[in-house]
Image (cartoon, rainbow, N blue to C red; front, side, top):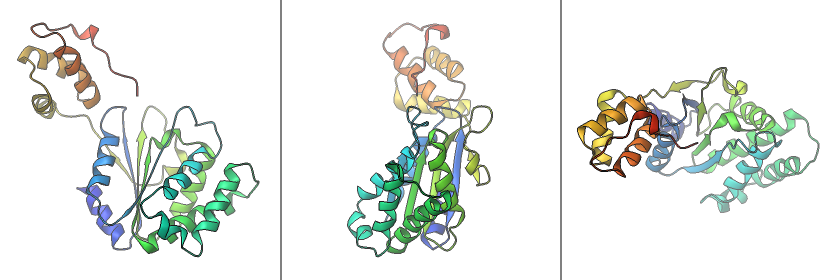
Length: 238
């Protein structure tokens, strides 16, 4: 509900940023994708941090540019008087051209704010903790300078110990909590035909984590009539 309220506010011209924070597998990306599915008459720009690219400078911004060029609003954006040159500037930096951090941040701000003039922009950043540091800094610089812009930036952040995405810590966050036992059991009932004993094992194993819950249900469903011990269950890497 809060995400929908923020989207409506952004569509009305009030920029907003929200971080969905929680453990791996708790459902942050699912919430983000559901928001995209519900959004209408917006330009969606989706980029995701990658653990394998977090030390590649400007990899995140390169993905940002590519996502906009491939969006359904690309033709409109490329006809803008300022966006193409700003995108080109960002691409040049990603390719090795030297530029001041301020100039790069302003180029990102130009792209985001100008894109919102043509149609509200929903900027989704999945696994922001894995974005490379220069990309995080430039994006944070641009987002802090949005005001009466039709932009909602929604990002997911895996919270394990000390926060990694320092540039975004000042921005509002929404903690994505584990499922209650009641909700966990309800989810299992909709996705599988497990015995009551198997459901009990899944609930104890997952401890409210939807990814672990579904993984446990899939493993138990392969051995009908038996209930594997909790110690034999595993959760896929993510």
